[in-house]
Length: 115
Image 1 (cartoon, helix red, strand yellow):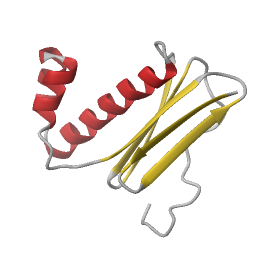
Image 2 (cartoon, rainbow, N blue to C red):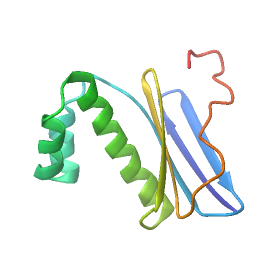
Image 3 (cartoon, one colour):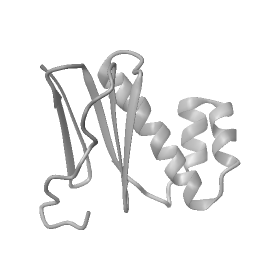
Image 4 (tube, rainbow, N blue to C red):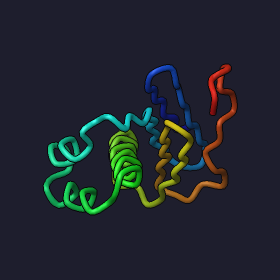
């Protein structure tokens, strides 16, 4: 059995699998963050340039997709072959695995917070 847990702000996410290793990351999307500076510091100038070519919301979503994928791969402990992305207003979730998974990430309970 493989599992991965992540949290961001009030959100907690968990993935479990009996058929393949999994890595999961969830992040609250903060449009006020300097995503270009963070991207350059974490991923290098090339990744920051790719994000700089995007406008506004696409840049922010692109950064969080990149960041969550990076974190999910670290938790997986290796390079993943398959990534599933789930974007909700204000939230990014990435589930990575070494094998294709039969289910998509889904919000089961928002505990009263808007999904």
